[in-house]
Structures are given as structure tokens and as C-alpha cells.
Amino acid sequence: MQVNMDTTVPEKIPFLRDPAKLAILYQLLTVIGVGLLSYYLIHNTLANLERQSISTGFDFLGKEASFEIGEKLMRYSAADSYGRALSIGFLNTLVVAFIGITLTVIFGTVLGIARLSKNWLMARLAAIYIEVFQDIPILLQLFFWYAFFYEILPAPQKALGLMPGVFLCNRGLIFGVPYWHVAHLYAAAAFGLACLLIFFIRTWAAKRQAASGRIFPVMKVAIALFVGLPLLAWWLTGAPATMNVPRLSGFNFKGGVTISPEFTALLLGLVLYTSAFVAEVVRAGIQSVGKGQREAALTIGLKPGQVLNLVILPQALRVIVPPLTSQMLNLTKNSSLAVAIGYPDFVSVAGTTINQTGQAIEGVALIMFVYLAFSLSTSAFMNWYNKKIAIVER
Figure 1 (cartoon, rainbow, N blue to C red):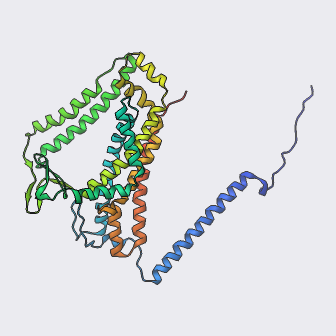
Figure 2: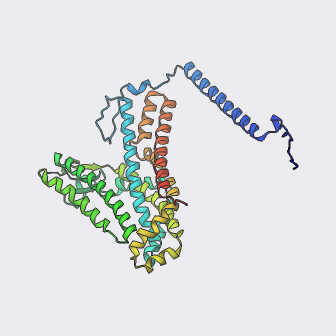
Figure 3: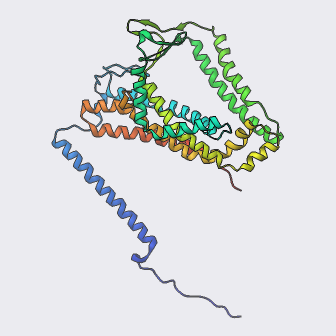
């Protein structure tokens, strides 16, 4: 028996001709170059600041701010620190971004579905809306809504009474609210419990439908829980009904809650502008689902609404979610334009802080960090959701 053994020794590749080793070398040189450049820029900046006697660091955050903020979600006065003032701006930006994203997703989805409607008038109106609002820059839309409130709407003395206790004027939307009572806390807890119950009911209904084919009326049960549980908690804890109704006093209203023109103009501009892009994303996602899916769903007896909810949208979401994430990030970043219409978001408060303290580098760094945190958290959540709804291949 003849055994053929190959004893050839592999040829050793020189270091400068080995692609794997050269790749590591180039990456190492790049990291070193970036590090040296960063060191030079930071050292040069600090040296120039020291030469001009400009203080550095974040010690200014503990000093007195000495300026007021018109809209705030927690207690604040001019005697508080810059750190607290920036916290107010952060919360204002967070509220605008959260409410704006929620309304944009809802309105954009409805608009995208209307764009594909068989009703000619509805489809044309949706198309016109999308084309108009996509083509007008967001900053111009903010200026328009801001001017609408201050130039077109009447003064408080001639405010438009939309309904009892609700007024609209150039000071904003003013409406009555209940006086605080512990019953409201219990009602909010009941609402949270309703959300939790609906989540479990929806999960159970999906498993039940997959196993038996029987459809459980999740929507009707959800509405009943959303409305019934908070009302029951409110009734059991005394059913307080005393309202804080706004009343005209001098040149303005007192009492109730006022939503400022700046907040409303910013929210309207962001939602109406971004919804036009979200509508196109939704339209493209729905059209990506084959027509055979719709026809097959109709042949087994599903109604058009069930076809959209159970067949079309679940498949379209896999196409919709990635570009939808980009539109959410765009809305959050565009909220920084609030400074143009006087809404005290984080950029506006940070700009005032920079003007008073002269520490522009730290102020801009804080702005960059805050918007980076917003973007990364939104991307992380949407990436998690995208993986959750992804098709699992065998």
C-alpha cells in the first residue's frame, strides 16, 4: 500500500503583503491618528481659553440662573440654578418629542391608508396634503402657525368660545380642568391596570385564535376597560366633579390650563410636516404586501377591516419600521427649531445659559449629548421592536 503524504510547508507571506495584518495595522494607525488629533485640538482649545481667562468646566450648573422660563413642568424660579433651568428645557423637549411622535404615527398611518383608499376624493385629498406639506420647509410652517395664533386669533376679551369652559385666543388654548383630588390618582392607577389587562387579553386572544380560529373582540373589551375601570375607581373614591374653570379677568384668563401658542405652533408644525413623510412610508409598506394576501384573506371570510388589521399591517410593519424610525428621529431633532418661535426647549434654555455664562463649549456639548441620548434611546427601542416583529426563518 502506497501512502502519499504532502509535506509541503506553506509559504510564509511577508508582513507588508499580508492583507489581514495590513488591515490591523491600518486600523491601529487610524486610531492613533484620531487620538493625536483629538489631543491636539483639546489641548489647543484649553490653552486658548486659559490665555483669555475664560473658565472651563461645569461648575456653572450650580450657580443662580437669574432668568425666568415661561413654560415649566416642575417648580422653577429665577433664583434656581442653571442645572435646574436646563432640566426644565429637557422636560419641555421630551414632552414635545413624545406627544409629537405619538400623534405623528397615528395621523401618518391614517393618512397613508387614506392615500390608498378606493374613494377617489379621499385618496386625492391625502395625496394633495402629502405633496403640499412635504414641499414646505418645516421652519416656514412653524412661522405660519406662530403667526396664526398671534396675528389672526382674537385677544382674550374676544376669545372664541369653542364650548363651555374652553376658549381659543392669541394667548393659546384655555380650558377647565378638575381640581386635584386623590380620586384622580386612583383613576390613573386604574387606567394603568387596564393597559396591563389589555396586554394579557390581547396575547391570550392571539393564541386562542391561532389554536381554534375563533376571534375574540379585543377592541370592544379594550374600550370597555379603558373607560370603565378609571370611571369605577373615580366613583368609588368619591366622584369629585368640581372644576377649575377659566374666567376672564382683566386682559387675560385666570384658572384652568393654558396651552401656549408657542407649544401649539411647534407641535402642529412638527406633526403636520412629519406625518406627510410617515404617510408615504406607510403607503409603501402596505403596497409591499402582495395582492394575493388580501385576496386570500377575503376568500376565507375576513372583513376589509380585519384584512387590514390581521393580514396587511402585520406584514407591512416589517417594511415600515426602519424608515419610520428615521422619521421619529427627524421629528425629535427638528424640535430644536423651537428656539425660532420662542418655546423654551433645551436648545433655547441652553442658549440663554451660554449667553450669560460665556461657556459655549460646555453648553453645546450638553445640547449634543441630550439629542444624542434622545436619538439612541429611540433607535434602541425601535430596533428592539423591529427584531420582535421580524420573520423567524427556519
